[in-house]
Length: 356
Image (cartoon, rainbow, N blue to C red; front, side):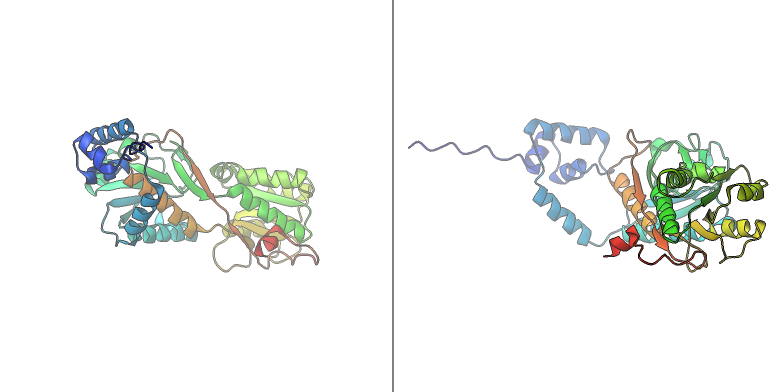
């Protein structure tokens, strides 16, 4: 019997290097879109790989990733975290997020530089020069003092960017944020299992915009389709709640949801309500031990996930405004507090189901 011809050798990195006229190390870095490789060289390597019909071996790629992960990380470059919130107004949520982001960055070999900007600042060529002088390649946009557009702040083409907030209205970058709609539905569910039927939301319109209307949408869904009674949310403009008492007397809520603990205390004081008391209170962002029940938004997870994504963008040379921005949403966890009564006997929440 005639012998079958030997199969053509599978295209490999060495063959690509010979065709492109570069080293095998350059091929490896170019195929991983490493920023050290120029765009022209990367195009030449990719073209050679396509002409040869090269396909990476997933088992080899897995092994190389494992080896790189075990190797101690040397210094990569510098990242910067930007916010418009002054230090004296910084909430524990931001401090925890930034601390986690900094620790993750250092573990990956990056330095982290926090930077505070003036609210409403326009184009800042001085900031851009400072960032480049410090070798900053990636930017993490933290929660801001107010929702705003930042199109003209920097030449975004020079940086890899990830936002850890919905307050950056434009440009649209990759985001890692709390799952606001899901978190608010969890609050509503927890309140209904405790016998509350008239759930009222008190929220600043600016805050509602910041979370993409996730809070108000979830409460309206609960009160219309989720088994509770219809209560119109109290979404107010500016800093004042001048119509709060009228809303309370008209809607008669038996439970009130506020964005945070300070807001909940102010609302209780304005309505002359005791906490704990007859009217239940829950907050959308609880941090640490508190009398208020509500959602722990897991800022450490958000900070860590943001840096993992940002480091990947830097390593692959992906800078500027993405054509298809992605959103990673982190679900929070319900934390009990004395501001609401205990669940009714025999009622099992979805959170308790998950525990099983």
